[in-house]
Image (tube, rainbow, N blue to C red):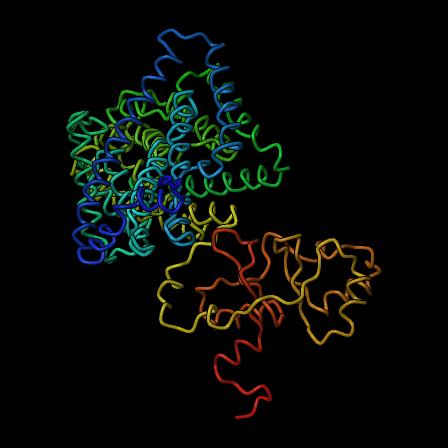
Length: 583
């Protein structure tokens, strides 16, 4: 009598994955065609996700803030909402905090295109609840991460090569911006200009296709209405060009103040103990709630008020008040760790600034200037160009959002002035600076252009000796005295804390600082380092600048994650230089 044998896990796995072999064959033979179909699918899915984002946020917002809502609710809803969302972000969705654009770029350049499904779900749900509770952040940046995340999840589940998965991220990002702003052309430019950092990227065709598909889903479900309805403005007198230039200069200074204060306040929150990070967003919620108690217009991203400003329907005092209050409310909300972006807030600040300057100009020179709405429109672009540093996207986006071509030249003038001032006074763009604060070092355009040169990856090796961060200077001096090395890694358990030289240890000992710990001799946030994709000559330059003969090779996704070391001897060997220095 035959006895049935139980099925092994291997047999069950083979049955469950029966489709993978023919699919892998299809991918190998028809990868480009599969990629094309996948691009269309991503565009449609991202379009649906953004539509759901818009509808869900609006419906929950109406429930939280019905007509005639009391002042107590305006105080408590932002506070309670940020408390709940702060806990969820800390406990379950740590990668869903913040804007989403820096995280998308980090996934593209430092994580092989990997964005998890949990991050997508967390970003969607937490941002929806945050914005519905009245926190004055935007949905567009989070939509970018959601769209890129959908593309990443699909690409990895279907077994695409990591290079192809990375190519899908700007595709999903473009689809998200196209649906979030109803601007398919600007979405393409944003994906290339900001996400990829290359207007000539070979992914252009896929980006265009996904953007168009996503926009079609938005139009099918919500109609083809521009984000803002504006009258047709005309240039009244050539004198206005001077006023638009002043607006651009003002927008540049506003952008610098916004960026510097946000980064400084966020750095202060990041220095606080990690265990209390769940409650940090409540600080932003409290600030917004207190402002909302007295001025209800502070709550939410404020697109309704932007529309009124574009039509010249807001009073000068209200625009000035909203400009000041929203400036600090947005910074407090974002810096404290709430989920939301700075796309929409930058447009709001620009519209209020432009409205204020336009109102003053029209009062002083009524026969030579248009009403304040035209200046509010140009101000939106100036602030966006200065804060986000995407000037071409700004011009095209304002045109598509308003369908008004008549202010393109003033818009270009203001954008140029704003971009120049912000770039001079704040050289590091805000998204790169935010990523840097999170320990993520994104490659610069110069780094990406050096792809053909010798890389640190070719010369790096495993670390063999380190010093613990809590070791005293006196002990370190004894340990290193007979060691031929001249530089050592300082490690805080498994994380890099910095690099210290023998000279620095001897100086500290001579200064009667023998009881100091090694961690006190290094800067744990800004220590010398390189990444695997850096050119070798950069390692030489950094060794020379820091007077070291060793540098840690760290991850772009986490500057404290050690991947190896590179020494001066390794670099010289890679270039074929004899150790004795002879020819």
